[in-house]
Image (tube, rainbow, N blue to C red):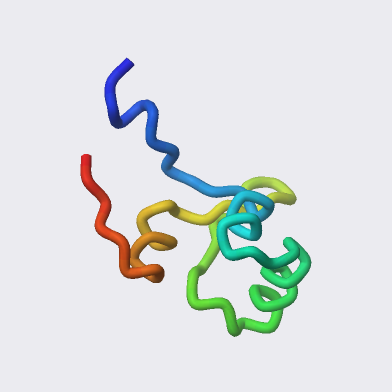
Length: 64
C-alpha cells in the first residue's frame, strides 16, 4: 500500500474532537453557530473535515 493510501483525507467529527481534546458536541455547536474555522463537507447526516484544512489550522506541514 502506498504512503498516500495510509494517510486519511478526512476526519470524522469524533476524530477531530479527539484530536482537539474536546467533546464532539462542542465542534457541532461551533459549526452550527458559524464560528468554527473549518467548513465541513456534509455527507448524508455526517460532517467530515479535510485533513489538510485541520493541519493548516494547526500550523502543521503535510508531507506526501
